[in-house]
Amino acid sequence: MSQGEERRRLVCRCMGVASPRIYAAVRGEGLASVAEVTKSVRAGGGCGLCHPEIEEILADARGEPIEPGLALENQLVCRQETLSRIEGSLQSLVVPRLEALGLALGEVSVDGLRVRVQIFGAADPATERLVRETLGAYVCEDLEVETR
Picture 1: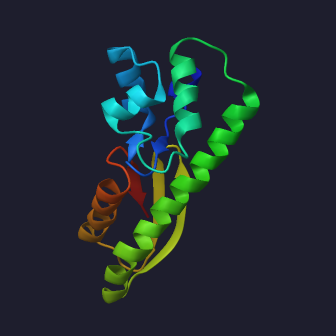
Picture 2 (picture 1 turned 30 degrees about the horizontal axis):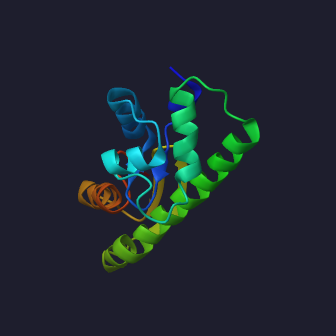
C-alpha cells in the first residue's frame, strides 16, 4: 500500500470524491492527468482547490516521490476544507432538526474519512442516522460517521 493511499481523505470537496475512488480509477484506467481524473470520477471538476491533491495521487500511483512540503500543504488544506464542508452541512441541514428535538450539536472532528459528531441530549438511532445520511448525501458517501 502506498503512502498516499494510507492517508484516506476527501480529496474533492465540491464533488464529494474520496482518495480511494481516485486511486482505483487512476490504477484501473491508467489515468495520467487531472483532466482524465475529472472526466472519469468528477474529482477536480469544481473549484479546482483539489488539483494539487490529485497531482499528488497521480505521482504516488506512478511511484514518484512526493515533495514533503507539498504533501503537508495538501494535507492541511484538505483537513480544513473537509471540516468546513462538514460543519456547513451540519449547520444548515442537521442543526435545525436537532434543535426541534431539543438536541444540540457539539464538537465535530475529522480524521481522513472518519468523522466524529457529538450530539448533546438523548439522541436516538434515528437522529444518528440523520447525521450519517446527511453527511453521506451532501459531503461524501465514503465518510465513516460516528455519533456520540
